[in-house]
Image (tube, rainbow, N blue to C red; front, side, top):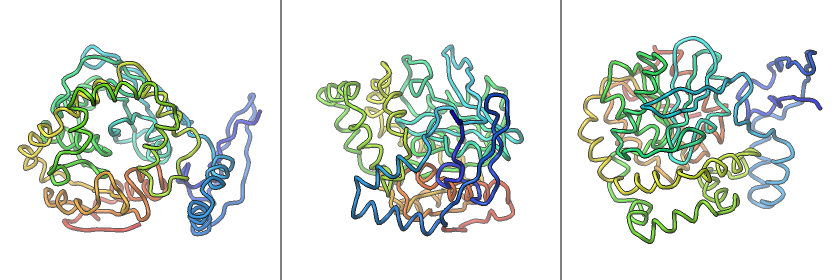
Length: 360
């Protein structure tokens, strides 16, 4: 059976469509294949039309014509380390300066499957499954934001990462900001992808209010029994164009969520949500001088783009980038555009200037 990676699909690899596909060894022999690729504008037009008029057909064709996301992408190693006495899984790839990827709530290292190959061409990339997520150990943890940031620092210490650039998404970006405040000398630059922040959390989220109740606790337990289609509904709500979710996306996220011991820590976190952002507000002045890139999807309904200026005001050296027609997970939805924005920031420091904004 041919074991090809269809890297002609721009949404999977983020590589230039005309770039030759690297050979892969199959049965001891090098194999190479080439494919015809539609222009970006054409694929977007087709996808949008199908989503609008023939959603079922669009999902079927998307499944047939795109490659399945891999739990451990090619060129990436699955590794393990001990963090505070617990076993933590992480993905490792590349060489060069370190780059640490921190996933959001309900996510894990799989969240970065479409970014690792491109980023690892320039950096040594570390993508952990934080404790109680993905395939890391389930254990009793303090649900505070400070504790999460300390856990990430312990992960860095376990690998002798004395300083690094950090890319964090959603609540992973929130934890990255707290980490930078705790240990600013260990954070070179921050890339924050639509993170929950003090300016976006002025009022309590309904999830926080619900899961702080006894009824909410019982509802949360039912998530273990929910079929993949239910998880898929909530996952795809984070996309501006749901059919962009590659085959395997829903199944992999659902499988990790069903691991016993996953839901209770999330409920505990929801119970102290407001307290966590009060603690973050108190330390935000300490990260003002750290160079930062803020990346947002213009159709993000989880952390609206309208809150981005409030976060940007906390940094003296910040670039803001908007990826059009994407939701809360632009690195999954349009990874090529996302990868390009991140590398432009990391590889061209001369472009960093206060208040600069771009659109892709």
